Amino acid sequence: MAKTEINVNVCKGCGLCVEVCPKKLISLDKTVLNVKGYHPAQISDMELCIGCGMCAIMCPDCAISVEK
Ligand code: SF4
Ligand code: SF4
Image (cartoon, rainbow, N blue to C red; front, side, top):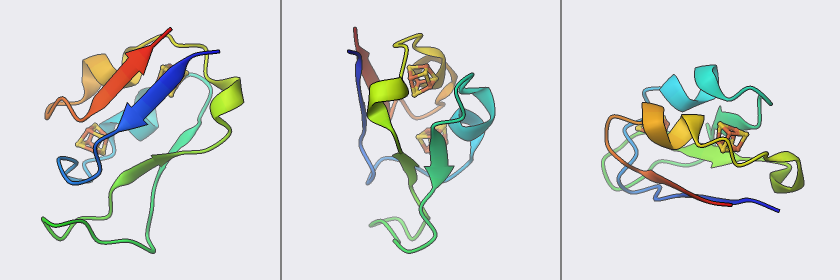
């Protein structure tokens, strides 16, 4: 199973990873503000992640790491 992690305090809530995930596993967590004052990305249903790495490639702030 792939392991995808988001460094929430680096995230600026731009939503690019939300758009690009082919499995639609990423959303912005509207219940949380990070240290920069943004709603950070979160991943649900990690067991469905295929480890494609698209979210990590797309993130302009390198906030996401993917291990296959
Ligand atoms: S690695 Fe691919 S499937 Fe997994 S969360 Fe990122 S974009 Fe979605
Ligand atoms: S692409 Fe990066 S900065 Fe933008 S919401 Fe996703 S994790 Fe946050």
